[in-house]
Image 1 (cartoon, rainbow, N blue to C red):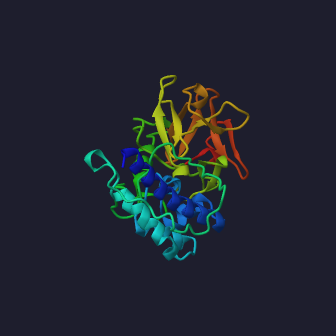
Image 2: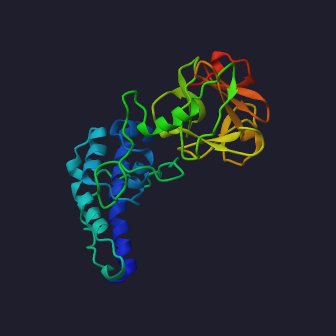
Image 3: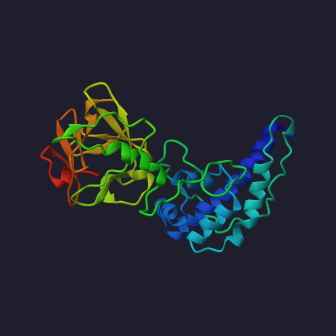
Length: 295
């Protein structure tokens, strides 16, 4: 058997499992974000499992099924077929060693013509579950306040306090640091997902994590890039939005600390500050009011 044949068998088995899990998610009526919160598995990992590009360990399949109130036993045979090919993926002298999946294994609740899932994350996220042939890292663990623990470094880096009045943050966060912006007035968080840029109840997901990347147009300026979607906070339209990053001044912001530990997000192009209102996000003349203060 050729190397290509072995790869095709592995891909087919993994996709059959992924298609079955994706069909289950569609029938459940749960969004990918809902499932991420209930199963505590990152959205990017779920997307790879549903596409069949990665075979999850059985413990993860079990958690996915239970999160959707489904007996995982009906998915065991599909997982075993996919896992056999995953653990014996043909490489070099071992090409062709993996057994073919059993075509007679039924796919529970297959949905013909199902719609592919939207994958918002631009880069791989840590894997969930115990060590497996996937060899992925565990998902970040939720802290007591419901946020991912690995965002703590970004939060600490961003909350610099001025000595007197308002000061520009000294030392920009590294490109790998991420933080959450919670509004002082609304207690909601800056969020970008398939629904677009918005101020949304804080939930600790990747859609509410932002990376500051220094740019050269102004002192202390940089873009704010969403960790899940890869889009940048933009002020080129009638209202703030998230768009593909282009290094324009419309996407350059300063993160300015205040004595009370809050920060202001000021756009370099317009000189206005990001504010959260009851219904939407806006940009206004910077005045230090609660809607313009973020923690």
